[in-house]
Amino acid sequence: MKKLMYLIIVIGVLALVVAGCGTSVNPVVPSLEQNKAAKGAVWHVPGDFVTIQLAIDSADVETGDTIMVGPGEHAGAIVTKAVEIMGEDGAVINSGPDFYSWMAGFLFNDDSGSGAIISHLQFEIVKFPIFSGGANDITVEHCTLLNPIQGISNWMGSRWQISHNEIIDLCTADGGGIGIFIGDYMAIPEGVNDNLVSHNKITGTLFVDVGDGGGYNGTGIVLYADFRRDAEGAVGIENNRIVHNKISLISDTPVVVDVVAIELTDSINDANPVIVDNAIGFNDLRGTELQIVLTPDNLDECNDISRNLGDNRGHGLHPAAFGPGGN
Image (cartoon, rainbow, N blue to C red; front, side):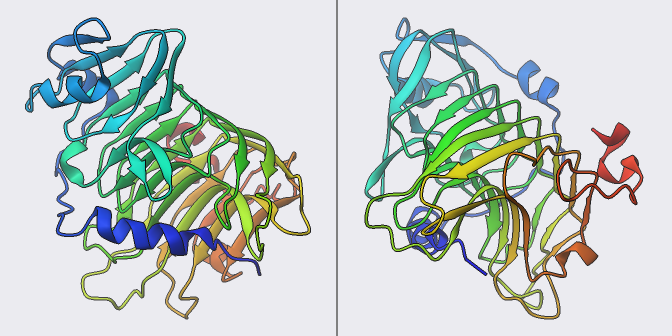
């Protein structure tokens, strides 16, 4: 079984990003409509502020405010407040905070940006468009991500809504090639729960970096755990839904790095799994040769994986297993 080797590098970086940061959870789960209703002033970039970072820094810490990003090229930012960042037609994020040897688009270094909304933006050049180390209640919708190493990365966050995004092409750098990632390696007491990944399109080619040593798979959507169930206070990666996504990927060098549509990886791989009670259904996986990879391979016994177009066409589970109305 190939492995997600790039996560070793990301974990090392993330340890620096989230050192000393808490992972508090808001006990009231706001809906997207409630998030939007709570916003305060509307600011324009570059009209009111030259950069998105200046707009975030000036936003009201209570209401968060809305930041409208105008057409043209912009730098991303470190998100520290519950702002809504919405792109107008032609808004492109093509630079941003330094992240290891690459650039990120938007970074969430802790939970201070919990409740933020990012929508209607195109990401180019930046290899980690959206990367979080502990934020909750994040919405990412209607964005286009071009050729990322790791597109939307949610470490240790709950109640994300990742929907109606398009990720076109992926790339590797001795690892990576991941479209949407949800995971935990710290065994946080709150768990990584109730994330929704729906109606996204992840298509195109995985471009393998010259000199890449291989030994792993690139993947459209990943649930990943690197901790034991018996870790103190550990809850697990539970009650997440991956539904109604279309994943059609090929690798330009499959003998070095191949691609998988959906991967669930419990790296400890013991008798007490931590990736449980998740629902993976109604996804169209027909354009990807390797469609579902489970590590260990019995994770289908503790997760609802059915009704996907492709090899996993099983109809044994009622649509209600995948959420209200099977949506």
